Structures are given as structure tokens and as C-alpha cells.
Image (spheres, rainbow, N blue to C red):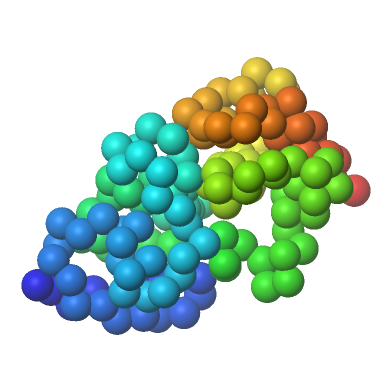
Length: 154
């Protein structure tokens, strides 16, 4: 076991866990931040996506020991009131069906727009590749990302 002083959603939080514990389980089991979902456990579906610094990362395969001093942002920390442009666009376009993958989809989309505020269709497809939606809402996801990009630009 080791003690980690992590900065999660702008707040310092201390956990005493095995260094190999995936960040996902630190967030969910130890810190009770359950918005980040478990999907596949092998970093292939994107349900567990969080931001490590400004980069979208799969938390199910990221050992807590790899976080270091980088800030972690979860879906709970993306915005205080659910008013991030991506979250607003998601609701406007009515993206979710079952909703399970949506936190990971939103976190990937927000990271894309932070690094590329005016993405092309190809940019969106590349950035969202590997975020699996079992309900197949990919057309609405792309539409919402474009809408969020337009809102951020204005």
C-alpha cells in the first residue's frame, strides 16, 4: 500500500491503495466518484474516460501510481452545474439512450474541443474512435460535438 495525494476535480484527496490499483477503482471505490463507468476493463470501450491534465485517458488501465502530480478531471468535475458546452449540446441533441457510455463520450469530446476548438468530421471521428456506444448514437454524438464547438466559438 502507498499513500497518494491526488488532485481530483480541483480538490486534493488522499488515498492509501496499492500502486497498481487502476485509477477507475480509486475514483469509484475509494473516493465515491461514480460518474466514471466501468465498461471493459481493458481500455477499449471508453466508458472510463477521464482527463489527466488536458488529455483524455482510460482510467481502467491507468495505475494510480502513474498519475503523479497531474490533475484528474472526472465527469463530476467537468462543470459545476452541467453547463459545459458539450454537456449542454448532449442534452440539446438528445444524445443518450441508455446513457452508460455517455460520461466517457463527453469527457473525450471535451478533451477534443479543448485541444481543437474547430474540429473537422475526420478530427471528431479520430478523437472519438474507441468510445463505444452500444446504442449506436454516433450520428448524434458527432452533431453534439459540432454544436458544442460552435457554442464555444461564439
